[in-house]
Image (cartoon, rainbow, N blue to C red; front, side, top):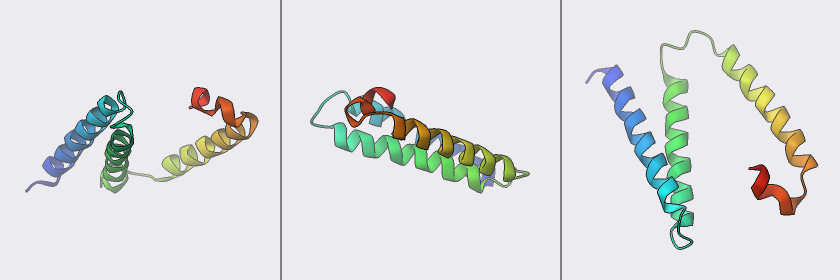
Length: 88
């Protein structure tokens, strides 16, 4: 099989997992499984993107990851625990 086809199939699978997981968040009975499915879909999409051979330079990805981590850390330390769901 062609590598591009596998990458596209993985993106489709990850989007299906993400959408089904979000749909399952609507009910308290299925929310835990929905959260797992949507996070698995997002993990698959991120891994496929990082393993893609068309990426020229990983420095931009590392810089964006570092900047997002710093902003997220400071935002999380400023918010009270009872207000955490609104922040997310």
